[in-house]
Length: 630
Image 1 (cartoon, rainbow, N blue to C red):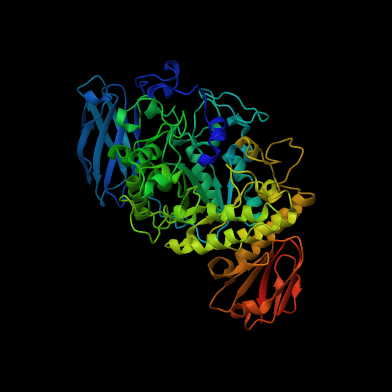
Image 2 (tube, rainbow, N blue to C red):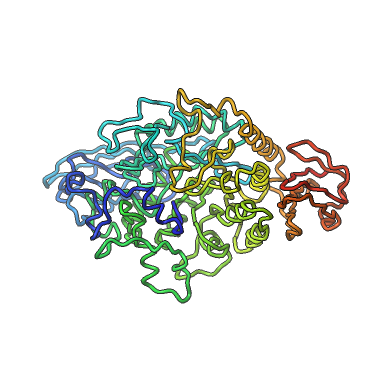
């Protein structure tokens, strides 16, 4: 989601479907679309669970008209204990607390609700956990993540473009905020493309249901956390997608939102209790300023506004300090990992959630799935403020000590863009961004990137300069961390985020009849760009020194920035970039501590040989990735 600098665009580009509300209650959809009572169907979240989970406790949220007046009876089931029930403010909900011992066998729990207005019997399924070793692989620096927006990438199943009963009833590819029809099948149809590019992991923006009136395509206003949006596919199709990706040696990262839901979420339409969401006397936005969390001179009011204010008029802020809400969220995201075997979570708007909840959520994920990759969006302005939200060496602040392994590295993104968007751009920011790694427990778990769905496209930012494009790609694929590429960057898709929809255009070739199909044919510079990314990504994959090797950088000098990736086995790659409009001669003796013992080098993309390491003549706006040889 977006950083506050771009708030005016955010309000227009996301989900503003109604005038700004005057009270907290008024931001709900109108009464006709928001019934105040349950519809009659019985629902239990989580929809099923597993035996053998490390945490034996299970909280069921039962939703049915008048269910709170009923008495629950659990038929005897070896290993399962009913710890009690809890009524909520709404009589349409009942919380059921269970303990499931480690010896429990899979099967169905017989739940009987009697004695009130609602009488029903429900078979709740306990499943066996999967033993597939290919599940939940996590991410390492050897991976290369390809980020995409499913609705805008490829339409593999036109039959699910329009789903009866959903609020957005049309598909219109020439309308910026309408749905365009991309889906899970469309992504899976292009596994070969990802592999040809050199990507090893796929990160789609959220796939869960977003049954909103407008701009539901981006996925960040969840209306059902246990259901894949039917316009993308089904839960089973998503599970098959993850399985098929693993069979192709591709990993899957799921994009998730902890901080807020969409205003058509069933738990907002029929609230279990007023304390499930943050509310103010009048509608109140977040102040979008994370500095309030760790400002030693900050006010409590600013802190509250940041954490409790709403992200937008149709994005109710979830009250994670409510223990029932916190457990509901934790179980929801354990459920997706166990039911699909996905490899990692990218956490949207990470700093906006309740700090104590974030620690509990992170602890639960890591205890159950030690290999699960976790990296969050913390769109902050300094290295220190960014590092505050990942595992770091800093002392706790206001009781918060982050346990998040990694972050999207906005500091690297900002630094690369600043270096390349003007002539003779400043290289010091990139040097400083890496120098700031001392703040982290392990900065190699961060995810560097050039652009994303909320930012102007990289190729446009750098003035559509192809040489600068190659420099940016060279840095992205040789710096520390797990690199991420936004869909279309590899074929020079361009535009500025004014508004966001302009950087979320359809990938050419993703729909039958597209005049251009970049999946199969990439003429001109688009082809050269793809080939450059592919060659360097492939080299990176086959030469672990670029992913697991150590990094040594030298202070930028005379517009040239040089660093090395090396290991104890004697491998060494030199990355040297001339960021000026003039050829530069660089004295190799400055790098003696890394060049010592090497006699020549080969530029890994072009194949050009450097016969002499004593001095380098680097053309204007050129980046070299040089494998050193003895």
